[in-house]
Image 1: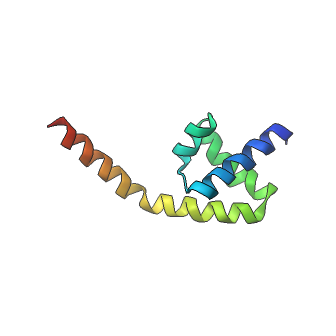
Image 2: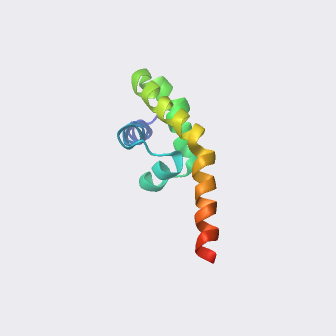
Image 3: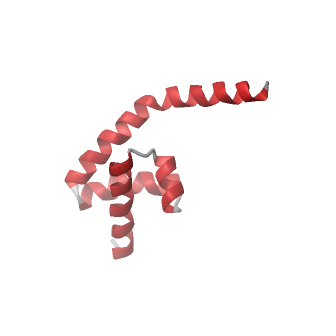
Length: 83
């Protein structure tokens, strides 16, 4: 794995760990796609840093469980603003 990819993986994981960001939020901040962020923090990070991987996995699992709530709230706001 190239050094630049390793650095991106660690930076992305650190950002998610510190801020509790979703994959979409992290992708926007890091300037890469959602797929890249997801691959970085689920596959590559597991190889590079197990401890950081476990921290990020907890956050991603929490975000996944709350996803339907955030989506429903966004839809509610959308239609409220259309009125």
